[in-house]
Image (cartoon, rainbow, N blue to C red):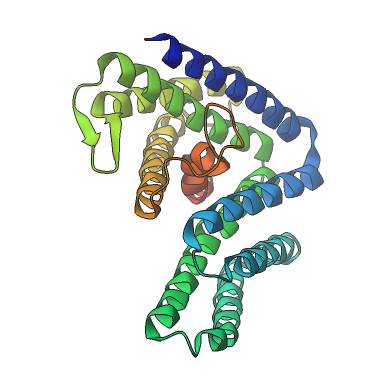
Length: 280
């Protein structure tokens, strides 16, 4: 490892540790209001980064503010309406379609290509709202359920251990590329190492803190959630490559943007929620 890589690793570790301690503290002692603020802030930050990549037309600033406002509305409604996922998705669909329909008038003198680009940005918006504005709400649902703090912590440890294991095992032993078209540095060895680390941390947490979790669940959950987190990592890389970006942002030193750090977390949240309903 050269000096530059060593410096980047130190920055990555310091940022990760500081952020991890803060997040764990908020989850353990924060309560439902802090979790609402945390998940809403995360959704807003993720949607903001996505709009910076996805929107290219002259009204991109206005579209960004509209999506951020819609994210806030969806988060608040999700808090007060409970099991309302289907209704929220319908709301997102109609709100976006009506907004983009009304604003299409500004392209009437700019040709069909601009109108088509406007329509594409509507499609991007629905995808971004579902992926980054809606899915993070499952963290609060997990937290507020039975034994919610434990389940939320298990979920985070699965993701963090998976990332760490995949990074170091892949760096030392990685030879067989997993999907070089999308993420050339990731290897099969790293992927298996990440899953093994997720299982080990979950078994440790079960034996020390969370006896309610069965042995079978402590093995199956990290395998399923960890695998989906890795898929989420590839999906985020796919999005960045499609839009021509190396990182989604620069808010987290050593990691890039929020989407770079929480890609696997967001993608695997509903999977964790489903696993809890099966194994709780």
